[in-house]
Image 1: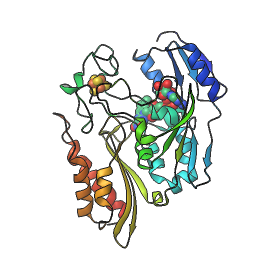
Image 2 (image 1 turned 90 degrees about the vertical axis):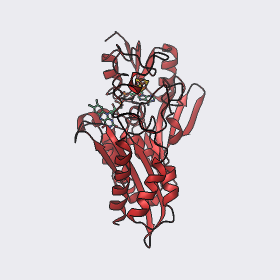
Image 3 (image 1 turned 45 degrees about the vertical axis):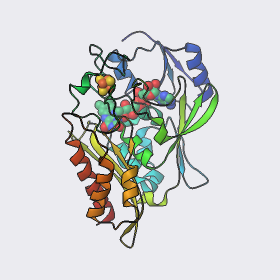
Image 4 (image 1 turned 120 degrees about the vertical axis):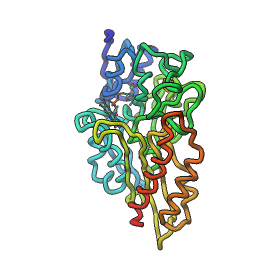
Length: 328
Ligand SMILES: Cc1cc2nc3c(=O)[nH]c(=O)nc-3n(C[C@H](O)[C@H](O)[C@H](O)COP(=O)(O)OP(=O)(O)OC[C@H]3O[C@@H](n4cnc5c(N)ncnc54)[C@H](O)[C@@H]3O)c2cc1C
Ligand code: SF4
């Protein structure tokens, strides 16, 4: 690992200023569970780390409208254990608990989790070309090992998937991300935070250099108390999603009044399944409706040579998840 400077900021403004002063080679450091691994691999070579893991952004607070505001330095384990999260947003607690391990979740922060990089093996191997790591060098995954890469929204430049489980739950909940940058504070809907790769796969998100995530806000959603997160993976632990589903439903008299559905492991961003949601609203809460909704979403899938299995898998996981959630 290359030598680097280390600095601990006292508050969010000081962190933004410290990063600006240090210049392009500086990075924010959360729990370090992704960034430090990438530094060991030579994928990231920062010359300075601004530690934001101990900023006074550790609170989970009720908002006046009945939602929650979660500080960016809240640890993944703290968030999963919070009683309000478990009762009001169980899909979020379950998504967090399905990720990594207890030790990692104790270190990992909300901000760092959202900005963790893809697990595409070529991205992590500096001896290989990769448009995301070295723009213009090519994408060996398209013809190579892409079994666990994207089936929706990918491009000729990159077919990577976004790895965060938490982000899938947050996108289903219409969360918003609070950001502090050089020009002050702003809010970004979580569903606009992560980009599809297009011809600029090096840009994972819409954030500008130096932007610091300070909080995530969850709006109130009464029916989120009937929600869940289901993750299919190659191993029962320490494994990223092959396909995952975050779902919340509002069913009355056997009819789906409203629903939220998002998919993980299928795209460069956590994928809000809007077409499925639209197909499901007003329909009877039956397996047939769930299958039709899954079909409406997955029509747009464009699987690669070795990952076509993800399409029927995603369909089955959506149907099973909704069936169990609705007790249908
Ligand atoms: C063995 C293993 C298994 C894993 N399994 C899973 C899994 O199944 N599911 C899953 O979702 N995750 C999994 N993870 C990933 C883990 O969740 C992430 O590494 C972790 O959430 C990253 O959080 P962090 O605080 O450590 O981020 P860091 O590593 O500190 O930072 C990650 C990135 O975010 C930036 N950053 C950090 N904080 C901020 C901020 N406040 N504002 C702006 N930028 C910031 C950093 O500069 C860096 O680019 C696994 C990791 C490991 C090592
Ligand atoms: S899929 Fe994306 S991350 Fe993977 S090799 Fe291609 S460009 Fe790189």
